[in-house]
Image 1: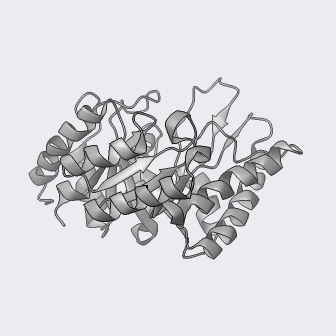
Image 2: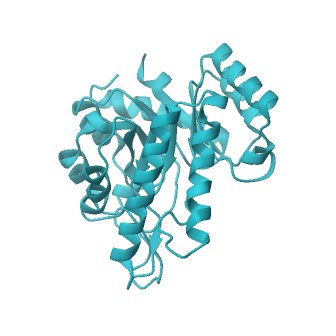
Image 3: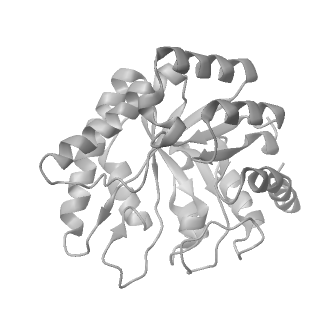
Length: 275
């Protein structure tokens, strides 16, 4: 499979899933990411018949479907009742996984309120351990994403952001069903940068690389490639050089923006000898 075919699209909440699959088929997109939290794509709208139709459509068009949990729900929750609901929320994604014929589920580490960071990280680790154990019974692959920074004086901060925070989770959960989703624009916002993450990361555990542009050490934005200062050629050289064979996911702008950017990204990769 060539590089362009490996670059997928994050549908997010932009389009009804069935319409997104048909759009992808018309445009030669083989990897799709979808959030199942709201409106026409809410988890609760998928009965067995609808889920089977989605699975059949993906199989017919050769599309690999991934699910993406909502980062606004706090995986690091520890309060009674809300905590139990968080477990149920994550399990619901694992439950629908095989019904839709999905291939991965992207999850997050949640967020803390500065003073309770360690408590939150411990709660998140234990919750993800429970999720992964449950996912093993469902044959589901869980991918933990590295998150973005928030302004230094913000009360709320995501985890994991730094490589060390990310490692806390992937060293704490040892399972073939627990993998990683590397978001390069999030890495670009912190001192380690894309280069630091790539140097330290075992790409044997990475199944997805997520793409958007931003400004080095700046704020969380998802710009079209070329509108920030992320060096995509160098990124491809480093990632592919570490033996990565998985898929990439464009996550910015409109569907048309993400589709058009595939050619730009392939050209940037070709400049450094990656095809």
